[in-house]
Image (cartoon, rainbow, N blue to C red):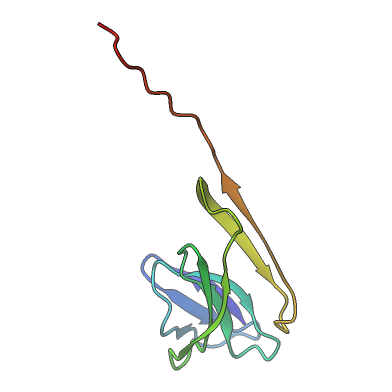
Length: 109
């Protein structure tokens, strides 16, 4: 099965052909990460920080909290990528961050 994002929602396409199926429970804010090993659930990230990962059944819309990833220092985080093995036993992530300096000038008259 292949999950494809259309203009407003996701659909599931069978690799053997046939009808496409609309998905349930995936919002436009969600980022699908990986099918699980059974091919019946998708790991999705709601793009919040700390990162909340859910297992989602796209046919019923049932969403179950799976994991929360909290970087040690969340300051300056912009976005990230999360990789999960289909069996859910391993994951990796990285986040891009930008740190800057703020200077305060006083008595400039």
